Amino acid sequence: MKVAPSILSADFGRLDEEIKAICDGGCDYIHVDVMDGHFVPNMTIGPVVVKSVAKVATKPLDVHLMVENNTFFVELFAPLKPEFISFHIESEKHPHRLIQKIRSYGIKPAIVLNPHTTPQTIEYILDDVDMVLLMSVNPGFGGQKFIPSVIEKARKLKSMINKRGLNTLIEVDGGVNDKNVKELANAGVDIVVAGNFVFSNPSYKDAISSLK
Ligand code: DX5
Ligand code: ZN
Image (cartoon, rainbow, N blue to C red):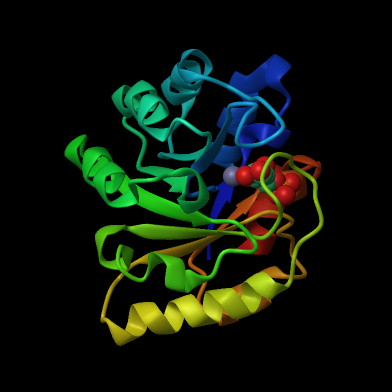
């Protein structure tokens, strides 16, 4: 299992130390939650702060957009060269076009599904993305309770991916901990995002290892 700690739960007063600690603690990606106060009822960080994160990071960035104007935010974050930019299918009228745009920057495009959204909605764009991110909470805040229906959804999605012989990654985000991670792995999940679970542990390294 690959682990992407969400810096939403980090101490922003000492962000550089927090980033170094998760990188030294063996994380695979740094999950960056971008919220606009419109698509979700919260606001987080923009490219200025993420640029400082990128400077100290020794692991690739995984940018999760929770915004209404996806194109605007893709253009803002693309110069920071994250590994992935993911956007919500629920907030985009032209997902296929946006996927091509993200790829044109040399960045891997990923699509995000809210808890109520079925994998069938992405049937005709599944071949075009590198990763599908399944939300296991309603997006907007860290520290929420895991919604278990995501496990069955991950299984369905995995079978769609296998049937087509694709290598598309499955990521799950929200309420992940050392109790539910095993079921997620069994369902075919490749990467888990973990905010509260990692940053509330006195040792980030131990928390990351227990998820792996
Ligand atoms: C929720 C975010 C998540 C969140 C995960 O909107 O997308 O990345 O920070 O945090 P935990 O692991 O605390 O649920
Ligand atoms: Zn996220």
